Amino acid sequence: MSGRINARVRDAQARFAGERYVGSDQVFRISGRRVDAFSGVAADLYDLLAEGTVEEYRRRAYERRNDWPEPDDVDDWGACTFRPDGTALAMRVVPERASPDGRSPG
Image 1 (tube, rainbow, N blue to C red):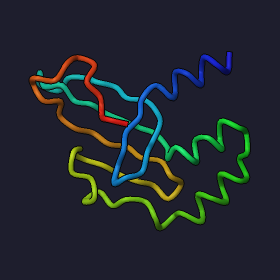
Image 2 (image 1 turned 60 degrees about the vertical axis):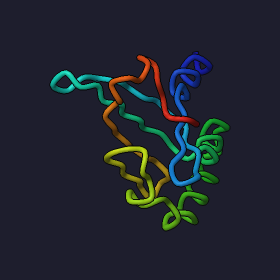
Image 3 (image 1 turned 180 degrees about the vertical axis):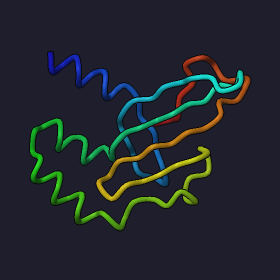
Image 4 (image 1 turned 90 degrees about the horizontal axis):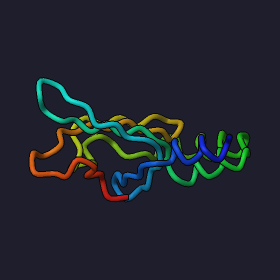
């Protein structure tokens, strides 16, 4: 079962200010406009969690707590937030011409 969960959680990738994130995305509609929402964690920290090395994740996340991108560093998404623990949430309006499964390059 854990392999299935791992595959589902890691179904999307995004790159913010040069940092690769893995996680999940969802496309939904607001007033008829498609919105893409991505949530994930920095790839190197995700790998630590996937390996079960939680203390190492905590140590590295703490060391990097001031190194995450600022929302102004990301120009291809709308609203973005980066947390000290290495997690990110980003949203953007999907361009009308985009394919139904168009995703951020990872």
